[in-house]
Image (tube, rainbow, N blue to C red; front, side, top):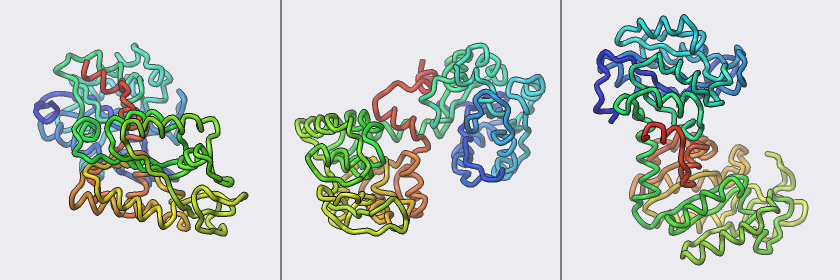
Length: 394
C-alpha cells in the first residue's frame, strides 16, 4: 500500500526508530536512520511533508538532555541533504504550529516521545494529540512494533484505514520474516545462539514446525549439553531450564527436526580476552573452565549443515565474538552463511548480536536480509501478535 499511496499535499506522521547509539553526543552507528530514508524520501518526492517521531533511550518520563533527539538533526539533515526542523516538545504548542503550517517537501523531527510516561503507558489522550500532527500515519519502526505504546499501537486508531500504513522498512521486515516462517524453500535451517535458552524457548518451539534442522551455539548450548549429562565446568548454564531443554530435544525428535549441539569448544580458565584456553569436548569441560566458543570439529559440521540449507534464519552468536580469542566460531559461521546466500540460499539475520557480528566481519551486504528488530523479530518468530502491526491491519 505504501508504495502506491500518493502523499501529495499530505502531512505524514511517521513513527521511526531513531534509537541510535551515541557517544559524547555523536552518533556511532547511523544504520537505523539510513533504514528510514526510503520511506521519508518517497513521501517528499510525492509532494508530501514529514513529521517524524521516535524515542531515544529510556528517559522514563523525564526531560534529560542526553536523550534529546536534537542530537539526531545534523546527521539526518546531512543524509537527506535538506533542512530538518526540530520541535522541542512532541505535543507542545510550537510543535503543533510547525506541523500545521508545514509546507510540502519539509521535514520536522519531534522531541523524544519517552519524555512523556504516557508514551510507554499507551495513553489514548497522548496518542490523540500526536495524531493531530498528520493527515496520514505511517509506522516504519519495526524495532518497537512489539510494544503497545501510544505512538506505535494507539495512534493508528485516530486515522481512517486508508490513511494508516506500514512504511517501506516495516513492509520489508514483515515480508522477509514471512518468507522464513510461511513460504520457505526447503530445507530450512535455524541457527540459534546467544546466552540463554530462556530467551529463545518460544522461538525454538515455534520453529520446530518450520525448520528441518536447528544449530545451537553460544552459552545456551551448555544448558542443553548439561541436560544430557555432560560436564560443562563453569560454563554459563540455566539449571532451571534443564527439563525444558530435554523437552525441546524430545519434541524435535518426534517432529523429525535435527538439533545440532557443539561437540567441541574453546574453553577458558576465566572470562577474559587474555585467558588461558584449550580445545575440549563440549561434554568434558574440566572443572574451573568455561566454554566461550565452538571448536574446530563443530565449525566443520555446522558448515556442512549450512551448505545444504536453502532457507536460513540466524539469531545469536556462537561464542563471545566480541573478544578476538573467541570470535572464530561466529566469524566462520557468518562467512559460511554469507557464501551460501550469494550462491544458493535465502538468509535472514536478526537480533542485536547477530547483526553486530555480520557488521564486524563486513558481511552485512552478503546475507539476504538483515532485520532491524531484536525483540520484535523474536516475538514475530514466536508467533505472537505484535501491537504495532495489528494496529495497522485492524
